[in-house]
Length: 148
Image 1: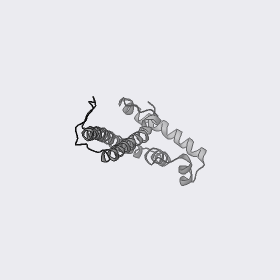
Image 2: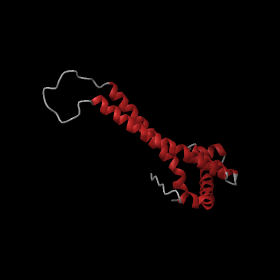
Image 3: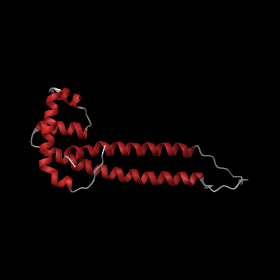
Image 4: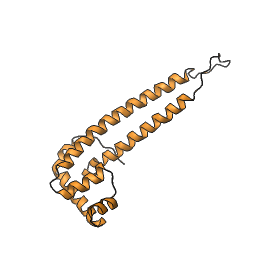
């Protein structure tokens, strides 16, 4: 795993969490529109008759998954912020924080810093090398790779 992949996990986890929450919202909307029939079915079916219960069960499972993603995301975010905070050069810190914590584009970062886009890319590249030198052993031992 490279430093870029390690830091990029935050963006990926944030998107995964957002998708889980969206899925939960959709299922809740669907569950609230399910009608309950109090009449006995005249045709035998092999499916479950408790559609509301099945939907609630799916929602609970998704909420548990979302909670696990959220806990992992928060822990990883705190760790990465602490690692970025320890970067020796202010420009390295600024670029890495803006890119991986604030999820800003290089164009926006360049504009905010008053540098050219190309200069920000150079700083980013140097910052990643420095980050990897400092923390490679630590993030290589995680065995967690969330590819894009």
